[in-house]
Image (cartoon, rainbow, N blue to C red):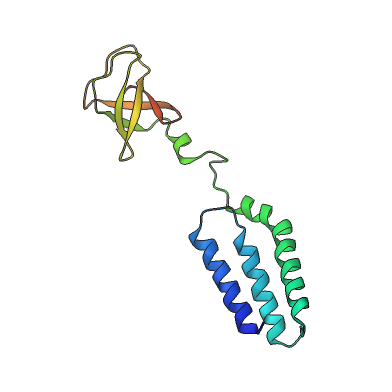
Length: 145
């Protein structure tokens, strides 16, 4: 393959990494293709099989060596928690009357959620509540103080 095909493949793979959710896989294959493209362009590599071999070595080698450090570097200070796990303490508005230990609906962060009244008093429609915890897609809520 010519150098510009390797460069195109590398840019395509880098673009794929940007538009797909995941954990940094395509990035390393894109970098491998760009490196091989540069080596082919500078006439360091002359054979097709060597291009593909180096592409594989560069891609898999950088994936194995650099993926975990890059993921640690990109990790936020929330640890391994998903955004839904950090909803404790948020305010939710009750959409249905909910008896004590009952279930209904509540709005939080612009979305409607299943809600469980974790308090010992009924919650009324429109009442502001505090999210105690999240279990699956259910908010455990108590009246705001």
